[in-house]
Every structure is written in structure tokens, then in C-alpha cells.
Length: 118
Length: 111
Image (tube, rainbow over all chains, first blue to last red; front, side):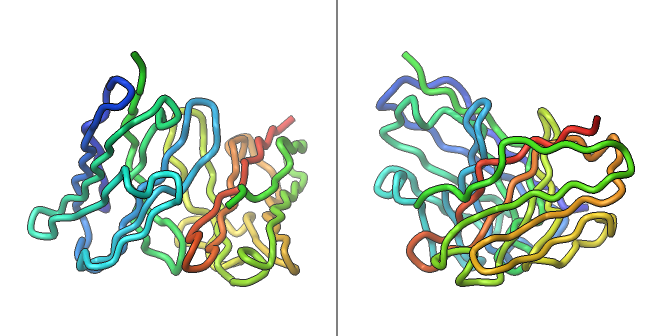
């Protein structure tokens, strides 16, 4: 069974940092692009970042460039999102998602809530 | 990159059909056959319903179908059932500068 389990969310002050983790099982992790997608409370989905299977290629949405870093440890079947200089606009549920279908997102984790507030 | 345009709401009675539109531009929907649709029930993670404009993943009922014309994609849910009541989001690949853009979402209500 394909599973993606996010953790690491919580309350952080503006300007602070947080690292999200996504533990993966049930498929060959290193063979897939993995994405982060976020959803602010009561709002729609927003694509944030993706990383290629071998970790060599990464992409980001413009408003997180220079602040967020996506990475992966294929030996541990784990994906990361390092988030720095957070603002209240970054408050959202962050989903870890497998890019299993051509340019589509086929398996989603349950999400982890990040709240940026003083 | 602006979000794709979807109607905020749509509705239909059980057994009827509902079609949701998703409008973008030649930089996203019109430029690629990589439109996908996601269903999200309240408090749950999204679920992939359609990929590559009209393909259904295994396990998705054939009541769900997708299409595209120019810069607009559509999702049709035929034979509406109570469990189809949810939010639906379209998504398109948008090239090497913008990557992926989602629609604003459409809430489907089964009357």
C-alpha cells in the first residue's frame, strides 16, 4: 500500500524556520518525483515544490524561492521541506504528494499543518 | 502565475450530470495535454480523478470524465451520487518556469 506520512508541522513565529518530513512506503521511492502542495485554511490548493527521484533536480513556485528547500534521502525513503523566514501567508496544510501519473499527483499524504503566528 | 478559473459552485440532483469548467491560457491548459482533476472531501486529502485531460486512474468510476478545448478544460460527473459532493480542483502543467498551477476550486453540491 502506498503511504506518505507528513510530520513536523506546528506553530512558529514570523521569521522563524520549520522542517517538514514525509516518510514514504509502499513504492520505489527513488523512482518518483515527489511534490509539496499546500492549502491555506479555507482556501485552494497551491503547488509549492518538486524534486526528481535522484534528488538532482528541484523546482519551486516563485514565492518560496530562496526561502524553502526541498530535499530527499532515498536510503531512508524520506522527503524534506526546509522552510525559512516564514510569514503568516505560509500558514497552511502542507501535503506530500507522489508524482506518479504523467504531470499529475497520484498519491497524497494526510497533510501537516503549519501555523505562522506571533 | 495566476490560478486557473473555475466556477465557485455547481450542483445537480442525484442521477443528473454536472460539468465544471477550468479556464487558463496558452501557457498552461492550452499548451499542454497535462490537465488533472482532484476531488477533496472536507477535512480529507485530495484524490486524483483525471490525468492527462481525460484518463482515469484505476478505481475511479467511469462516471467521471474529462475533456479540453483550447484553453479550457472540463470535468463531467454523470449519474451524480451523494458521495460526489466535494470540492474539485483542476491543475495544469505550465511549463519550465511556472510548473504547476491549480484552479481555485469548485464546490459540487448534490441536491
